[in-house]
Length: 536
Image (cartoon, rainbow, N blue to C red; front, side, top):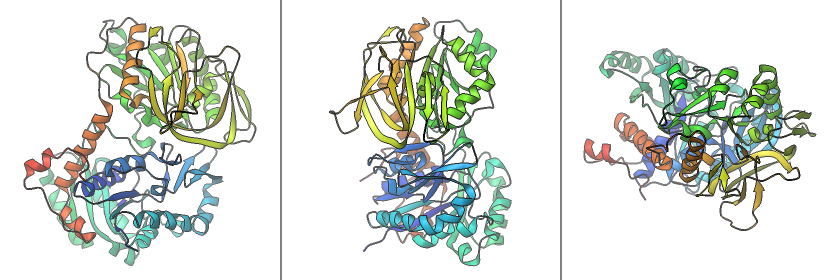
């Protein structure tokens, strides 16, 4: 059986850029004509996506699959860990709930029970692709966890991967973190690290060169390059370290006193403690006519034009947190005059009650905000699917609806029941089906509050533009003079990222690690113009 070549991206810590560099390498190898797939054996994240099989994986691996030009598969991320609020985590294995365990219990069990599953998934991909780009988790030098680690050096050995170690200079201490990581690896592991790279650099690279030369001599490994800091990439972050939540707790005075008809629409997203899938709002943040704030104060709620309750890993716990923090009352008062949207767990909170008889997230029952006539019961089976459909309403926020198509994905464990007279928000079916539709969500009688189970709903340009036009129309604001084509922006961002990585890293060496010959563009100009996406 032919086995794929393997390159692994390791990091000196979390959030050093492993996910996006993996995505960049996937796109570069694909642009050079190779079939390529991403792989991360174990991912800890509250950001997830639904695969074509209707299973759940980390959002970053779905992005990387898109960069490679292939459908996201559950085998690309066989283990997904979703932290809970009680020092335990929900463990998702091959897209389905495996159990809820403490960190200590998981570390004891993962080699014996989960490593064979990881091996099977990797072998499945390795037999179908030319190249696998693996991503490590956190740091490979966590010596307290190393004995049971299945995401870094044990995975590198299993795949016989050549490793690139990445450090983040934007966080400071990059040379110390690179050196310390290598020093804590075993001799055999250190030999697998073929070189290192520095990520997110700002400034004059010549000032960095003396340190690079000293590092190369010290560790006897080559620096493959320095990747610049790339602002305004329209690409989702791996985890909540990428979420600009608490740095800004309110809008500026200029934003709140501006009364012109062309002012920005103020959208407040409640930054729940167990906020999941915050990437749902990247497309809104990128709109020039929107000022989006992740907020946790009653003052910010009062100043918003639209409030969105997002998805949550611990829906009842987050609802109780809102009651304790005063946001619960603030939202009920806001509902008399403002516009409110609930996504997934956020929709469940907008209902009358949430019950969890099986203790999937929080045992017992609790009253919701009471803004939608629905009741939710948590269940043991998780619904995970890509879905599309259309809105069931002709009016949104009091404005006429013209474009009704919707698309996104569902990841939830609740079943929602409707009270008499309740109106559902949309009708949905699996993405590749048009029959067997089901009701989704709910919209209030005055159309100013609605909820849906559909994640990614704002990534569809037609719905997002209509949503913004309806909200602006409600406040008698002018239509936005410019709107984005979100999927084009994402493709442009992936191409921009891949172009910079290919320009700044020694791709000849990286291709050689995989036993492949690198055929560079004929000129720098051709490299900078590469933007057609994946070549086949």
